[in-house]
Length: 458
Image (tube, rainbow, N blue to C red; front, side):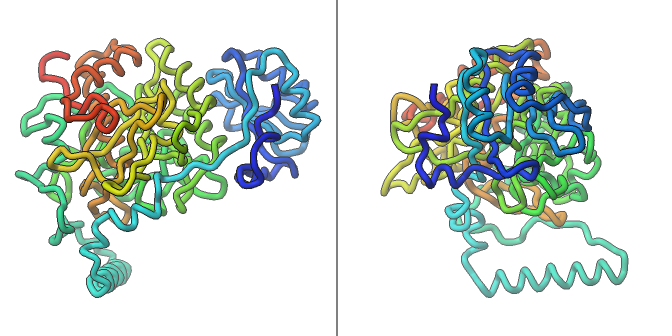
């Protein structure tokens, strides 16, 4: 079996991340079985030894030569390893019968960030003058806070972009769309959801104290802490776990009492590598995450393959006891009615729940990817147009994308876990799909809008 990187184009090879440990690029090794014995296979091929590091407590086994940085990370629970190796060393790894396949270390990102600029906030109505005034006001507020030590509470934006979802009786349209009304009983208590994204604003008044850096929040991006320098991650975290009573006066969080884990696997620029994402998945699984929310991906062409790497990882976690459900954004590559694009990776994987985005009228979002081939099915839909949630700086914004729909689904999954604490990950998948509200073409919507469980049972 040939190493995949040797068959890739020059453009694909250019995405391989060079490691600090050696001059060799990183590759991802997929083993046929998840086993502690995988460590010995890598150690023998690279002629290195196990190292005791801070990552050992996360279930990540690092290997290296004495006095040098790690040359490999092994994830026994997932049956995967990330190695910095020469072609000779890769050949030795490949020759081992326990190895299923070797992959280049690819870059993933916030779905179609170039498109986000045009759909998020409508550029706050597309007014450069307004953008300037808002920036000026923010600068003045920051300066006053620094001089006086006083911080004014954030407020709900007084101007919504054209077509923004309505906030009804101090609740966002997204909550109503999934069946959460005033007095709804479930809040996600007892469930654990991990958001793997660009981090979180640790000081946001709605999220402050929900996670602690170094324990329930960790960064897997070299040189960057968990603090969100983008906004994407904080927005997704808020949708999952925003409080029942927000300082902004609007409830937007699906599961206010969920146990939240935050893994920074995408940089502040909005991109990250497979080995960083796998770090986050391994850590979240080791911390007992019931659900992992991933608003990230990479473009997949029509009839292109799904990621075998992420499929095997997701399959192993889904089949565990009680297991972990991976939920991912379908992607924002479509431009309806001009054209549509297929579901991106890793959402295209059969064992990852792919989420499409709909607007307040329950129409498919113009940007939402769809199933266009024999693979890459959409499973369910979530609110994904003009979604109000938290962003860094103690503020709130309306963003659009399948990125916004995905944490809605992860939050609803937490409600099902509260309703039935013994539910297995595979059963949770089935309930989310079976209870969804049909909206139309399955290729666009999947089974439809996810629905919160009825109070008092599942």
